[in-house]
Length: 354
Image 1 (cartoon, helix red, strand yellow):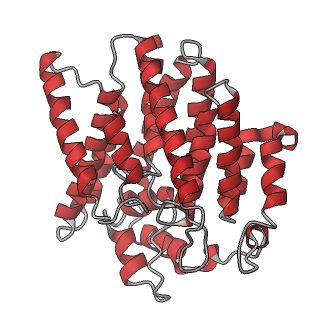
Image 2 (cartoon, rainbow, N blue to C red):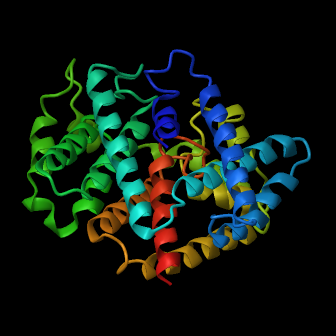
Image 3 (tube, rainbow, N blue to C red):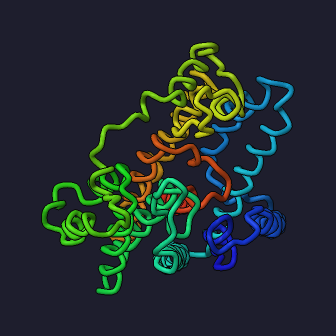
């Protein structure tokens, strides 16, 4: 698990000189063979939540809408399912205690890798002066840092309180509005009582170079809703509201046909689902999350309380963050890794409790 998760965290980052993604797919391939071998040894038990079967229909719809893009769509959807199979198999243990221990190990690995990597690249900026640390863009940096902050709450020692505060501080350094949103989600009513919230507010005025102040950008007027990306997604949905326009249509129209030439992508994971699968596919995704939420709630009394709360916080934060990025359902993306590890862990613990 350590090797696989490290590959997901470090590949396509500042630590990766090639940025091809090849090691990620090699790891997935090896782990998939290991998974298939374990299935054969356990008389066909898949270890994967049955609720994922609900996604097969909308994924099929995505692939069949456009014959030209069908092979690409099939590879994309199959890679996502393989990603899920591999992570679910990593969490497959003999007992609930061993499964919890596995998730604790993942949390530690994620927290310290993300913090160390972003501190090493403390002076790394994008072309438009966004601080991006070890990752490829600002929103990715915010996502992994706030995920690290959420997972830090599973531990009681003082060093994890320091890690939590550091992750929040670094997330605010990006000047992203989503840092403020996820911070509010993580702390709720206690927001005024946490030092790790007030520190970023004060430090934000002094952290950027060349008079680029994160808080100034944070509260500046936003043009994101006025750009073509979300509008194109809604237009695609309007063209075929029942079945959507098929896998890849959102990517094509926002990258190839965007009049502004930004190549921004849809910047909304949920709108991608709606535009690519239509109302029918969206209903299946809704059913998938409804069923899995029922399983997760069943495990609330049988799971370590702090770990349950930490994983739930990650799911909520990244679910909301899905409104600003398109990678929630991406295979092996560093932004989707903590979401699906937390999801699969909580779902498994809930099924075991039931």
